[in-house]
Image (cartoon, rainbow, N blue to C red; front, side, top):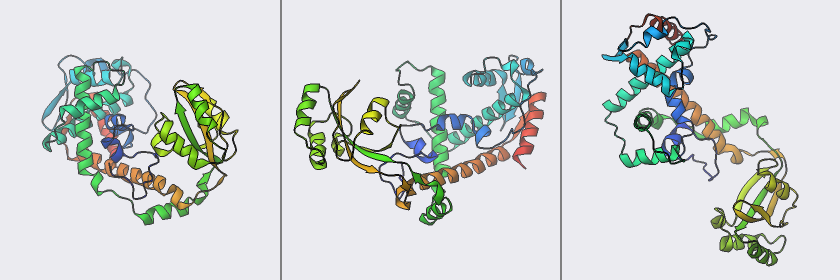
Length: 341
């Protein structure tokens, strides 16, 4: 995953680029399964609420709904797609909604076909890792689910290789955005918090007795030596927080402390915590260096989305698509009229 030139190690909103190559989906799975709805920005009219008169006919067994690049789309394939999308009663969908879902289905086929043409292969180890990450409960995924995830990974790789490498944001662009939106960058009162976490209360009391208020260096060293928390190697540094963002039992304690003060032990499901407020950061206008990574990620995501829009529109324009369902054909033409405006 490429980091921004200003990366400081803090978490910010992830872009399409980071979503595809990290352990977090960042919504990309739903994005790629609903591209025409979000990326192509079509279907903006009010929903048609009457029951579809041809839905049952379209989903009749063996019916060919369309031919895409010479490949027939039969009713069973589309019905399975509707089921995966949670459309349990396809015949009750509005005309517009059926058109949206049909376009999603077609675009998914086109993306999958181009991934195949590009020779993209998903290794079994990567597939299993993603299935485990997206299914933390450990239930055995169905063959359909595994197939869908494999297709998604192939399409992710296609998009990353086709359009994202050409997208970037310059330092000048981030500075310009900061100047134009200066009034938006207001940081509320915050506290910078350190933590020591152990499982035994008596052990924490012992550690606390050896610490003095205001001795930040000693607290950090104790955290490195004794803390069982994930922040131990950082000297117990939890980072900065605004009031109301920590769990209630922590928030109440932390925001009652002054800079340099050490809390009494606080129990949680993980053990016993000791907190120190390293500093109190009052409400202020954030400097450029404080928000430049956030701005970079925001601008990068916007550019990636624009590039993705263009890429998807071109795929639809280049494809040979013959819609045979009378009702879907009318909706397809309406949607493509919007697409080409």
